[in-house]
Length: 99
Image 1 (cartoon, one colour):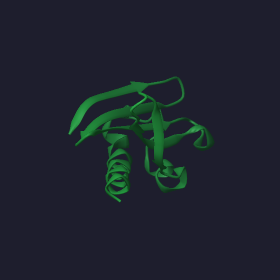
Image 2: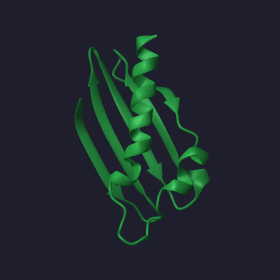
Image 3: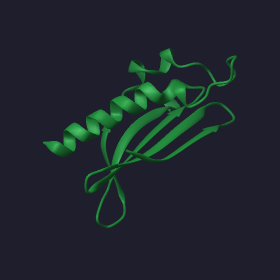
């Protein structure tokens, strides 16, 4: 269940952050699409009892970067541009925590 979602346009790109509750766990998915592939990233993290985020998995940029529009594309990108990547990462996080 998504408990929080933020989307922001940046100077060269855009980013999506989602926070999910999964039973006793809180997961955070962060996808940052920069103008440069090497400066982009997509990760899923779990909130630890010490209230720090620990990375569970990352999605390599070659699997999603080219399929997403650039920052200045028309129409202007919104959260849906990164939703597929975020959904895949959430699924991976769920599988990891169930293992």
